[in-house]
Length: 304
View (cartoon, rainbow, N blue to C red):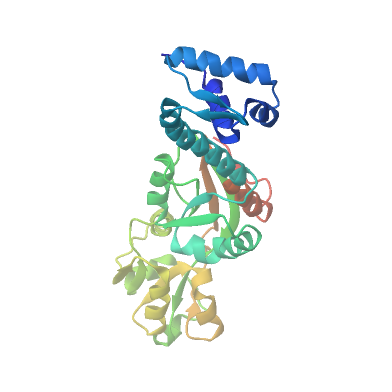
């Protein structure tokens, strides 16, 4: 049985209105067209659906049974259309973002605050993970976009836009005062107790790669999953900490730690927005992405 779904739509409105004429007015079609559609539906189903009454029509027993199912289905479709329109109008929906502690704290947070003020009904779900895991989440379609820190490997189907510079530094407390204001060689790090991030992070990969080019290999005393702890350990003289400068700004300003100076500065890197060209992005996610990119580094898309 292959019945035109338009017949069910007309059937629904006739049942609601109790009149062929009123249903036609609601649907902007003629009363004869309504009558013809109902007759074709009754012929296909093999049963009468309405009986005439003085003020219009009413459902037969068979019609009431059919209507109980059609009503749920049709009204569920209308609800779907309504929710869809709300998503397009930014009245509803969800954004899924992947971000590390660092990108969330030092880049995303103020934008999320502004976005929530403008679109309070949009749900924002942030999956907090290091850059390699965020890349995996994007490939699997579990997030709409990610905000990650360089370096990272990606294929041609990943679009990358640089949005903010970051700087990696080494900091130390008063125990290492003899190193302050000296222009150091990176080889000195092999003689110092080092505090840094774990190896599964983009920051650690970047520092290790840079130092290896300078023939230096770190042998850390402490390795952590988050950078905040590194600054606290360095301030307590438990070693020399390697962090993105943003994490150490407050401690630097208060004199709890100082920045080590080197003859060759560590090259700056970037926070980047990553999207997968294969995955569609919701209207809400596009709106937030527009906010992020408009405050970024301009035309900083990386092409491969």
